[in-house]
Image (cartoon, rainbow, N blue to C red; front, side, top):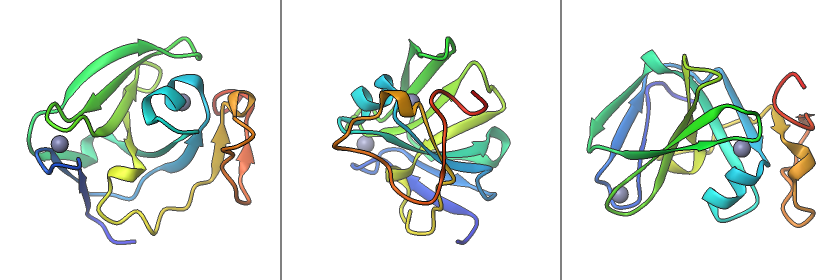
Length: 138
Ligand SMILES: [Zn+2]
Ligand SMILES: [Zn+2]
């Protein structure tokens, strides 16, 4: 991989840069991630907030209570609706960037699969990874 790495939404209105390697890349099979992604799971690139910088555009966001009990804020492009990142009240020091928004996500190496209890049989994240029924540490 190369740092910094950049990404953005589909229409290009919102662009971001991250100056450090992610702390963790993971799949989330929770119901909210399924709904918001429109498919089976979310691939999250967890970075420290201070390493994340918006370059152009202003994402909009909305808050949703998560299965974990935390409130998760979902940031998206107001023009194209592209999902950009989420932040959780349970981990205010970090953002979880939507992996699909990276310009080059080919280097990502997910280490685990969370909320596996909600996973769909037709859309299971694969690989030699740790599996958690709920969030990390459960
Ligand atoms: Zn956009
Ligand atoms: Zn989730």
